[in-house]
Image 1: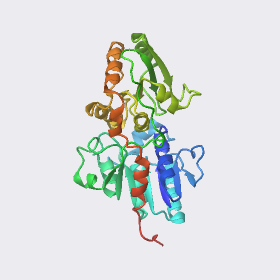
Image 2: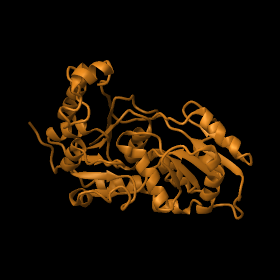
Image 3: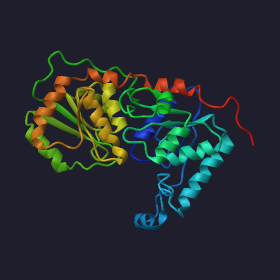
Image 4: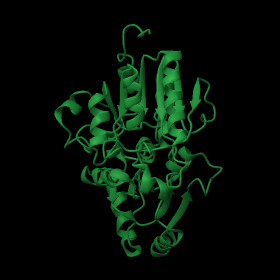
Length: 340
């Protein structure tokens, strides 16, 4: 059995879990503070939350980083103790061959302290702080859901040697994108705006200003707060340009659809989204922006996205990232379980 820990923030970690699990030929047990996703048929442990304390109290007295060594271990948090007990009890009962951690330094260390090999999902951005180094150094492998030569250029060699650069992982990887129209629009068409569940600083007024500055374009918004009856894949295929936040899951889905795009970073710890936006820009794959651009920049940005097209996304997403991850996972783990 493989275990897979998925962080509850947003939906990207849970989506990646489902993609990788579907590609594996063995049971996958999910662990998360979030409930099991709809349609999940394998084992699931919903972990206690460790963030219920008053943030001001934690900041003053909780030492959540344990003197800068970890990311989140607030003193006196009963939920933290409960979730740690849940994880260790699960290891003892199920004896997993390995655990994928997506993402938590503390979970990665706890599982490894139980004698279980870990595969840590490597994240974009600046990850050379003490806590990340501890998780990455102790991992048996690093699962990098992006192409080699993007977020790894400043990595130490020991990380690169054990990394699996599988490219973007999307729930749409099994679908074939529609070919680009023979006569793509030059200035006008449909813009699909994608927001995730992880929060954003771009406001409705920002979006309305961009719409007003591009009267020949039709803007369609999709987010958890603005749902649609049209399947997302269909909307992606219909869009002439996609404007998306720079979360890994959203970028992977736009990549799978091979659509021209403007990728706009939203503030995240460790500059996660900023790093992705800069990479798609540097690679010439899409237009990347560190923040929501001013209204008068949008006509030029949409024209630039159209001129770059969507074919460059093939360098970001192979279409078999989850399958490649599953193949690598089949080699990780102890030959026989460790028995007490």
